[in-house]
Image 1 (tube, one colour):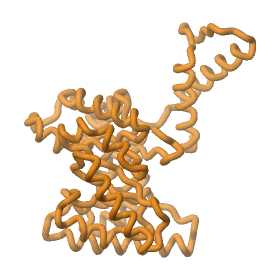
Image 2: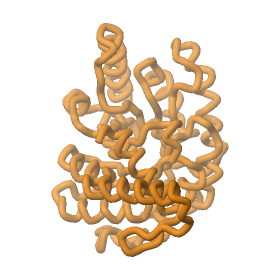
Image 3: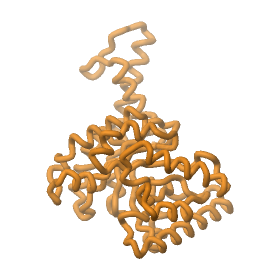
Length: 304
């Protein structure tokens, strides 16, 4: 992940754009990023309502930030309808406005789809008085074809800051059982390949949702597994999931302490001119120490 390109966002919550109360409540939550939804979470008849309400809340946020530059909300993204769908153009007309930070682009299978969105943004940003390139892209990979093209998709535009795994659509493509078991072990290969593509492109890897928001123990295990596979964050559907997701992708106090001691031991040994460094029963080499430094940099970026 390229920290300079975008600060790590550990938790991404879907918020139906047609539910005003949910939108209002979401602005005060501890989630890192909001994805105001106009796609699958909104019925066709309610999409116009969703566009209007999202546009209105973005304008309200812009006005508040103008009055008080210290005003903060979670990062503000909008999940638009699929590229090429007739609804997409109406989405752009409504939601590309100054308080928007990014778009979640669903069902992407090729770099050309990203290029289409990029051209529209290049044209619309200056018309809306927005800095060029200010709208970032979180790209959802939801099919086997998309997975095979994931690296090319992730590197197709400098606007892309992350890939999000669309587990439910992907599972449908594979005809997997409806009920997940064993922390979604049936998707281990796909998720591992996905993470590898994101890492190669130096963008964030966002895992799919844990659909049962009442199963907190299942969520905790799934989120832990996501981190172990190399994901940097996770999407979610309910406020009750936020704390567990944030915790899973946040270094613990014990991890931070251990990483500090690893770095200190390595630096001290190098200062003494030693080439082989033993610490805690293992030999320390540059990749291990670099991982420790990355963990400390992440903790610092999160204010820990």
